[in-house]
Image (cartoon, rainbow, N blue to C red; front, top):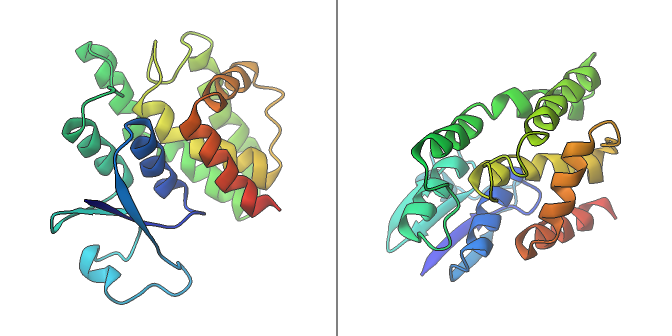
Length: 193
């Protein structure tokens, strides 16, 4: 059985939770207290970060890598397009995620000019979503999973208004109808209370 070493607050862990839910992969979850990480976690990931998955004694850290592994190990339903070009674009978006997450974390730390930088990053997503219904392209997939945890947390926990970004709002409306995203929204909502 697959084990997920998880922290509910962590958006990187959210990526893995969403993929596990989308693919209906049986697993057990071990919640890690990020304020008091157990020493044994460093044996599973030398950085001490979550998420980590373990299956039959085999251990893998890093959310984007885990998502790709789960996509290959459990191919149904597919979360990457069949077309090689579309797959490459989805992977590129995940690869360039720091262009989005860096402004997000700057905003969270309340750094000067962070709000403008984050608005610009959301604006990039909005422009993409004016062309296609999902970041992965024509269907929901790994690129969407790669970004939605941060967008949800920005809106729900940091009070970021998405009103200036109608394509992102429409994307979230579509995503929130998915059980995996609705479940993640409940996780985020628990921290907002």
